[in-house]
Length: 313
Image (cartoon, rainbow, N blue to C red; front, side, top):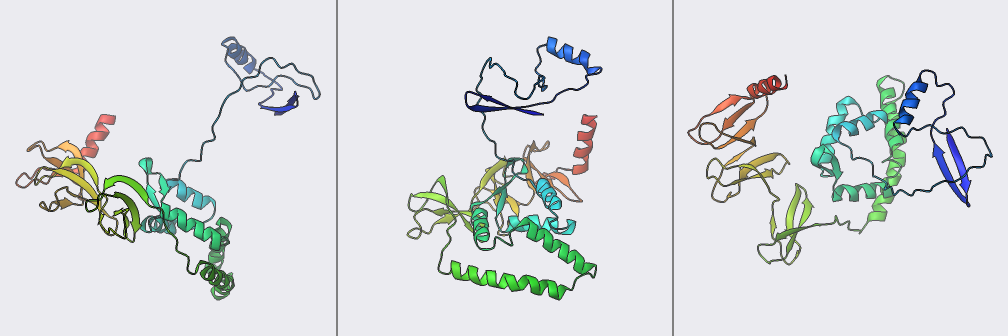
């Protein structure tokens, strides 16, 4: 129940519950009251009853934004809104990553990139009737009807495309000659050629570092991240990198003189035979192994899983 209370021209609202029959909980309530514990119960109130304000306490609260989606919660949202099918969820997630519309944060949360935000605004401005949950769910229903023989696919497509063609033509006219710029992200990295700060840009293969002095200075470099472990070939630091297709791999920081690289993740554990960094190969033949030439140490990944389970027990 809720109560609206007027005092000095201000409206105060209170919500809680009212117990009509306490039953056995009477003893429980008395115990809580004796312990000084606050409850959500409202006192007995009558409409029009005059109340006395004993105290006014102000508390500051900040509105928190909703939590970001992760892959599981995004798929759940798609399911609840009738968008897609189990067979389309994985390709949908892959597409937004492949096109660099989102990236993973810590905890596997999905964060929209600056490119993703720009594309979203363009679609909302020019295709607002299509980038709509209800439209997508309605289209999914129409596809189900086609599958069951209740609708003709030619008629469904014709009905959709008649409106879409006009929307597309208008969007092409409205956007003609307009250049959409994706904001650059500033960094502390200094350009090796001209000394100006470098910024993070987005290209066809993802993010990269480019000189802020472009087009006068065209120097670029890949974004690299240090990872645990050292190079088994020369002992220098290992870097986490990405291929042109976005697949992560690991290589030596001194790539100009050392050609070591691997698709397998370096782990914090050292080789018990030679002390070098160990690597983790996943898959059906998963294993933990040493990549140092002449060592040969390895063990099945299943052995590590069995060890973890025995420790849990």
